[in-house]
Length: 306
Length: 311
Image (cartoon, rainbow over all chains, first blue to last red; front, top):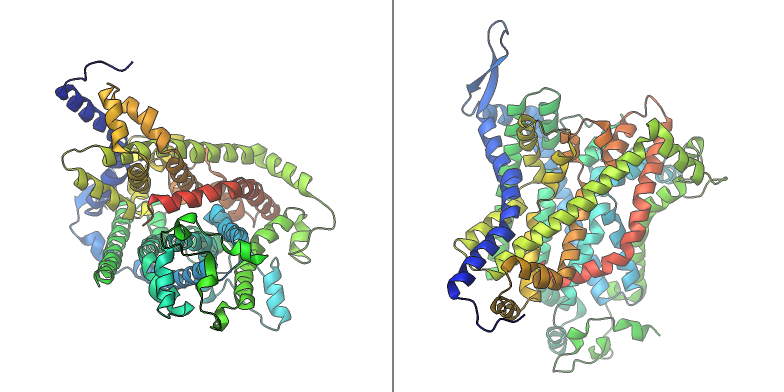
């Protein structure tokens, strides 16, 4: 039913405006309700606290607290050590993951000659296993009575306690690496495959060895991908919750219920019913994520300009 | 024989005008490979990574066949002497009055329904960002990108408090609605739209007098289908992985996700040691079918990542 005369300009423009509203509207409505509003609400809550008047009659009274909640958080040993733990966790986890993923992706791109598809599929599998189930499986593999791995180590004369003391940090990192490695390898590998063949051949003709080609020709081309992956991994690290919650249930680990900032926010909200403090912790997690994202993108831009 | 397999490169790379020729022949003859590129070294490195990936899944697979005492005795990486899969699965679905089936159903609703609705929202928004000029466009877009970087869990507790004021907590909606908003999907959809839909085609549809929304559904959505599948898969996995949101929103056992249910059982092991077996079987019953389902899909996913724009 092609019309013989094209519709007038004004109708097209009106249709276009309605189109934008109808296509973008639903997303932005929900985005505002579930992202923007909660964030403002959290900031609002963080400036108030509840005060119980003298005899406790008539319930709590809401008072404006200025920065009291923030002062409290920044002097709260639970909060500070929680932040320290996720930062330490990130400091071990992020570089380990990124380096391993880059090395495997380069090997996959360059050197592994057969079984490449199979290997990618295999590495990818843990990505489909939800974090909670991955943590449960590893919890069993860390538990002495259940685990063949602990048995194997002790047969070699090394009695290792995966759940106790400082080891628990590495046990958590291991769960996260197991879950995230394959996805990141595939992500970087996909980027490597898009590097133009002619660029690589040119470098080769110039006499560059495989090592030089990998690090000076290929790697810079996938650097943006690596940086996006790094950014997501850092933000993920700050939110550490599921894995320590599971390892905690073993009863043998030193993990308390305020071990990470997220766990602290949860227990403030639902064990102590201190919503204002929980909101404050939430805001501080978001601020920390913002600062780190800014630092990483700044670093990335500087690298890109060179 | 391996030579034919070596050329498993996308044709784009070898199809250049320079006629770069097939794969690795270009290396100067006589240059020895560094040790770390020798086939044996590479293969064993990859094999180690493969074994590391596979062992926990293998343990789970063997554990499904075992009784509770067998879980605690013997070698984790060997099957049971008997084959107890059927009775284990029966016990799983019978435990606590059949709760597990309920949890699976809930998870399916959250993950499949949420990912479908979320993908539609993201694709529509990404398409609109790509194809329409409007005032303040890049500012709105920057807002979406900022949303990608906000840690999800930082907004969950305030969201809970807002929902509590509306008495919406402990309903399926309290989990479902936040899950369908996916700013990263909008980012991907904009890139897919730019790559997959020529502007002239939309111009033609407009001149034919088709409304914008109808054009989106009849032309845009169809041409973005491969990209939409990638967004769907990413979001499905994201929801399936989300543990914190349902933990905060739900206390009613009948609305739980599988993950939450397994967590509850796992926390009650001290009261009933048999929960260990049920948690193991439950993990396997929810994970293994999904793994099998995803193996054929992940190749398309990879293609989607390559074309889309994770740049």
